[in-house]
Image (cartoon, rainbow, N blue to C red):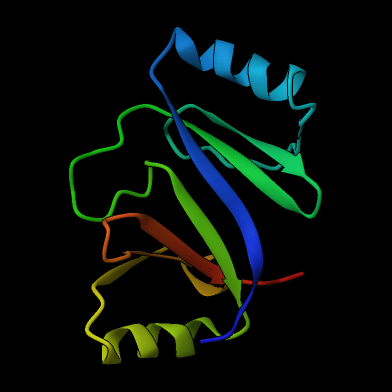
Length: 123
């Protein structure tokens, strides 16, 4: 698998009222600006620019499954997502995919239980 770069790091900021405080923190203290391109996922959040990467703030529950896309996670870009999926399967790593085409997101967990996301690096 060829990881090209980190695309984003996601931070779960929980339910309101802390969500507004966290958003103000990331904007004010860290100086991150909204990217303006976050789709409606059905839960609160914001995408903030950090150089050529992003920080995704995610509101709401992290869930309780082994792979938790709304929990803290890092997203790595890959040149070949289908190849990466085949490698994960060959290694016996459980994963699941959301979306279609270049918008697909693949989620899996490392041995310590940390969620990892892969996407096609379109940069």
